Amino acid sequence: MMSNLFSVFDPTSSLLTNWLSIMLVFIMLPWTFWVMPTRTQVMWYSTTMKLNKEFSLLLGPNKSGSPLLLVSLFSFILFNNLLGMFPYLFTATSHLAVTLALALPLWLSFLLRSWIQESKHALAHLVPLGTPPILMPFMVIIELVSNFIRPITLSVRLAANMIAGHLLLTLLGNQAVDSTILPIIIVLSSQILLLMLEFSVAMIQAYVFTTLTTLYAGE
Image (tube, rainbow, N blue to C red):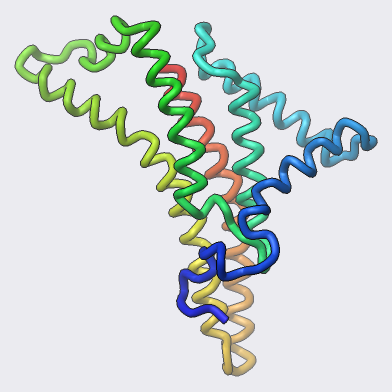
């Protein structure tokens, strides 16, 4: 029994998968190497190929990152987002421990590469073109702050969006307890619509996280 509304996001409150659910993606994906491809696998393959082309365009000619790494990141986040939509399964991407572990190493690697290999370009990027001389010190501070908070905004955005939908579903479910037929029908209809919205949010947030990471690498 949940002690509070946020107990569903506590990995110690449920028994089966918990943090081990993150590893399920590594168990299921290798099936494509020895199982006959299905329509779902063909559709997923075409989707990843389109994402690979899009990420390659966003990275630019310098290829500051690997499109294959970004497609793998998208697949990992999407799988865990959708996994959390099933009952009694743990949503790993609703925790900052997971989202920050994804965003921080990538951001740090991009930052170190830019400052070590392209230090002049990195310094010039702190002052936008056409900035008045009197505003240059303030722009440097603003750009530094915006660069350093990027992994935090990436991780908080993903975790907050996954938490918000689950909380709404939980709140609506609690309203149907000991109710008559009409309120139960209204709550169930609302939950079905919200569940459809949550599936779209799970896909959109995986795409947004990966796209913003690609844009940061392209800079």
